Length: 253
Image 1 (tube, rainbow, N blue to C red):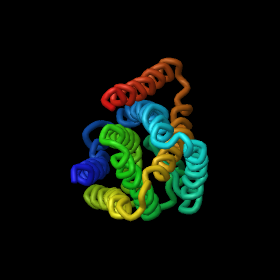
Image 2 (cartoon, helix red, strand yellow):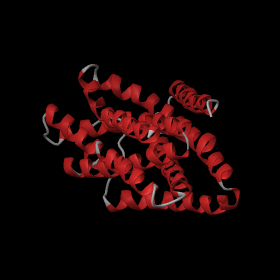
Image 3 (spheres, one colour):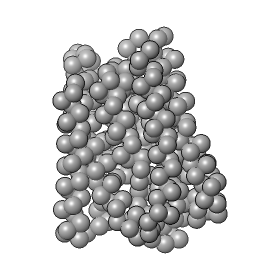
Image 4 (cartoon, one colour):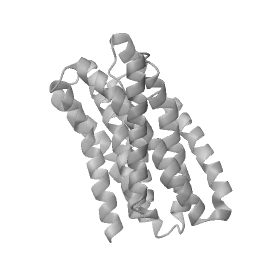
């Protein structure tokens, strides 16, 4: 009974991150844009740290003979994540667009943004639930990693919805509804775990591949847009801090 409570509580917290867009009205857009670069760096370290410090070692420990197959699932998950983004013509926008052209480049319309975000959040729900089925510490570290990369994503999505003509209230509301698809993904895993023995053995490498794809194709390219030496050093430090947080959580296992 404890695991489902952890799962539902975690996905609810992640869903509330969708309200991060309100920060656009607490500080200036330029300040948010600059801060997000370091949040993205920290997120990258958190995602990579979760994969290499928690997920991959857990896969090998759970079933050493299956580990080779698990790595193939990781690879398949990366291809799957790429295909999903291609099919729905959507990608993450982790920094606020500088102009209208960048808005159009990142998201074709508000509805497409909400749909793509809903699919992504559904997968996040799957990932979080599977991680908690492995162990509570792995679930907590995965939840934190998801939160880290959700903050810049949700702020970017909120900015796109405003640009598309949504009011502040409607943008926050629809963004939150989109985030709630994480609960559907989590419940699906919880309901199927009893009938599908060893679900985590297959889903954990899927989650790892999804995290690697997000870090490698969405987050790191955004960091390369800032070319200043000082900013680059701060990004590296932020990334290392993200990894260290995952390492510290690993000590709890």
